[in-house]
Length: 589
Image (cartoon, rainbow, N blue to C red; front, side):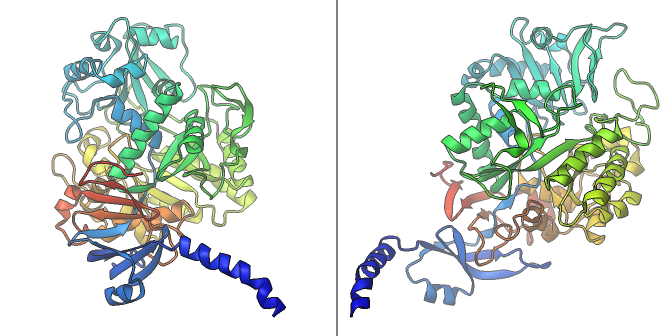
């Protein structure tokens, strides 16, 4: 009796607690539900989510029997997939793109020539967002699509404003152009030297800057200008970034080159909390002078002046805090293939302005020893490392330096990622396999720049870009990405490009490298979850995994392949809660 009396109060309290925190379940049925489990499509009649996780996958009869109190959600013939896991993009810049002037060409924008750039920026200055920055700016111009077939210059942008600084960002994210006031504000003059891994383009016959900046002459400056300094503006931009990600069904986004914006995202996570998950990869270089500026080691906080070690932050690791974590290090070895700064072993057929015949692009880190030290740093500390490489010469450099680090520190389950790899040679693939590389292909290049590549590297070479099918056949775990804001983070567009590989002119770019719709969907769900070490909780519909879901207007596995790009996200669900619904165009808390 003593023991019964002793337990009575705790038991009653436990019963009361159970009743007051009853599990909330939702039952999804009535449409195609694709689990993404296995290498062939698997469909189920229903799934049930409970308290943010998947609690049931199977027949509708069993779901209704076992979850009688569940809220029923009829898909009405629409399609349910796991939420999309972004394999590579620049999350923070989603908001910057949304707020700035839209300088994209069709189908994502309306810019056809330099006059359109000027008029778009002038119109932008009349909007409310123009007051959030000292600079007038726009994103996404593409010199290969402009009628002039060139970059705008400072003289062109001076027509927007002679007094206020102006910056336009190339669609690749590897170039920007400043007007005269912008160059003055940035302190760039005829006496300024080109930084290692970058170039200040000059006016013909002089050292006077013409406004066009390449690679590490551009990127740190762009970051500084794009990212706001006021807390309310930082929150505004990141809220916009989340809105865009959720609109496209992304439940886990990537900030693929975090610099000073890492501090902003930490602040947002602490004070607001992300609705989705955001994983950042801290850039190896924090300033124009690459040497000694790795993301490990003491750094001074740009706003508070505090000195700290970026990679020793508690945010580093596999666990999210309020929707944010740091996944590892990002290293960039060359530039943009469409911008002709990607480092090749063969010369470009048409060199860019200011370059001579025989030009092959250039490395971001010319010294192999410096790069090997970076890989050894990452491997020694067990940081996952993402490497941006486009040209085959850059891939050669990655292989020979990473191989030494792998031999020294071991290479088991590091999941090192090759980002982009446009000009990968077939003879490099076996070496990449030995290093257990995860290739993340930017297959949208087949549409956006397939026709341009035929001109700058030749028809035969252009057909070989993004060898996705070859990589799958060789046993790689393939992911694909949008690299947004280079393009909009529309996952159906990247699936379309991976499946169809059709250029703007309608040319099929490498028909033998097309992959199936299911393989493409794997590349943005279970494979990309694996890439991020999150395959045990994301990427497929399985009991125990997070209830991260996306409802699509059609099934990309069943529609005619040419219609995949028209599929829309109707609803995005994170941890069992709807965070985007197309029907009301309003995110829910």
